[in-house]
Image (tube, rainbow, N blue to C red):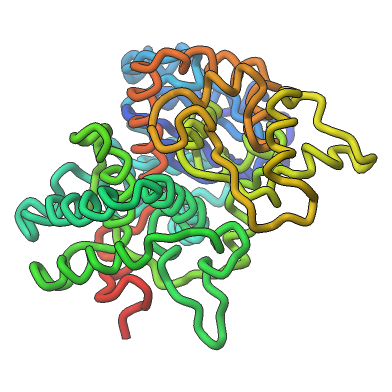
Length: 445
């Protein structure tokens, strides 16, 4: 079966997002002029096995067709709330008018036991290799999958070394878990989880560290201590990107005396770090729901991931600069954000006494600012989210429903671990791509 259209010249490339069985999304954004549910597109997609998320105007629409099940067997579906969280194991083909159905070579993988396929409709199918470079420039995960115990043979003590040093420092500085969690988040949202957040600026370039969202980051000295010990133990083996991912997990896990989520390893380090890209890619505390959703979708993360990962605000502090407009000038008329709990607003005004205060900090979860738990969602339901981006989660029905689910502590810990795993696999460098830095703050010479 081939797709049929009345106007052959109307066909454009359709880049399809494919989920594997652990929830990673693989592919580029749609550049088609045809809608996701335009019959010819839906028909072509139906010949592929599994769930497809076609991106149209920034929205993710689910396309599932019965013909795919007849041809390749029914998709393997996981559990979850709604189609958006369905997870499947993928295999696929590519369609082209006049060229028939052609198997697509694998151009990388991000997940376990699945391959990354590029689905295109149009006369240019034979030039898929040229388009492959476009996909790589977008930063889609390539070079091979992450894995558990990646360093088991090459540096068997790697994860133990990271944990011991991180725990040693957290024992005397209870603010570090929030700092390392934020460091990992900010790293992954700019060029993927490649430790670009650790690189120093040079005379000719302001690195990510110098961007406004990152000026309050800390813990770089601890990361370098870990790296030094690892280089002494197994030189040139463990990446700084993996150290950042492990440090986030281990610092948060300290209070539980055990690892509370799994971190797969095998990342490699990037060589580029630009402050301008941090400003463009890191979600702002001033974002509304629409911009938050798009920011996460740009990284192949879902609304579910957005809500769950916002739970990281259960630890750490926020600077007055990033929320004082909600207290004193929300609409530019000297007013207060009506969605903010009035009692909480009065409390915040005692801490942040003017719009110009750019030094004072306030706990994001005043009830338990140093304890990693699901209390963030409890105070959010009471309209006590500190940032506009926190309050925005209640303005969307789907997101608000997820907030309700996460009021269950066990659900929160389970879902947080899964979303951290997905975020930790965003736009990776693995295999022979990137490098293993000798020092985390500078690229290798």
